[in-house]
Length: 403
Image (cartoon, rainbow, N blue to C red):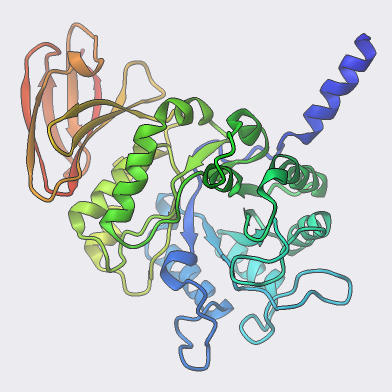
């Protein structure tokens, strides 16, 4: 009986993702929200999904400081491939838009000190109708490894959602078998949520480095607040699932696009950092305004996002219409990322003590405003202080014990 038990445990162990990656949330750039499935390179050569566009984004990441602050993945999404597999049944890139092939593109990205991500789909076809991986999981895993891919996003269109609990771990097994560390981004929980199938986050975390669990983001404040609301309502489930090597993914960062203002851009970066979420930008780095580049490259906010403890924060207080307080425990003793979030279209003031949001150190705390890079100074835990939060925006603090 003991031998059987050991064999079962070994079999289960071989299924778990074993790549040593995503010890902190991955950072990088992802093509989808900004460029979608624009394949018309004849009419729009500068903005179509192509090796030219991807190389230009990689160059901007290196030359404009993004790589220096931690952004490292350059990721394709849907619509990169040819409509047919090759004679050996392998995926192949669209020959007109990727004439050099994916391996050559990965080599270029690696030469810039970056990593390359690609997109696949668990179903028969991708969401845009390109070849899916169903029936080809092992072949596709090995193909991606042979190309030098560093991250795989596996979507779930055109599939039987009830089989995902088996199918995604199968892909995990094949990725492990390649011997190449490939960060695995799963869409599995999002499809189960939509189908009202209970999500086993323990199983998800065993098999995926990051996972989508809610609607696709779009370039709007309403989309951002909708995602935050979902994370608020489900935080008791999501917080225990997150940790080094496995993180919830609320979707792309849209800072620098056309649909949100500076306050809202700061809010997304702050909340995604409190969530311990991936920071995968989807924007045009070639013409981004400096104010948004500075938000994306705010080292103090990134420090909270990349905290090595990998703990997801949670909402600890709600006050009045639209104002919430979110708190994330950090790696060092009694240090915190603190966000006061206002979803309303006008500024709001919240009155609170540090004690009521969970701070307990008797000597009080020091607060630093990490959006403005200003020391706020000492705060006792019992007095009530007033904080005015900008419209559709946040205040974000780093809090640590006073000496």
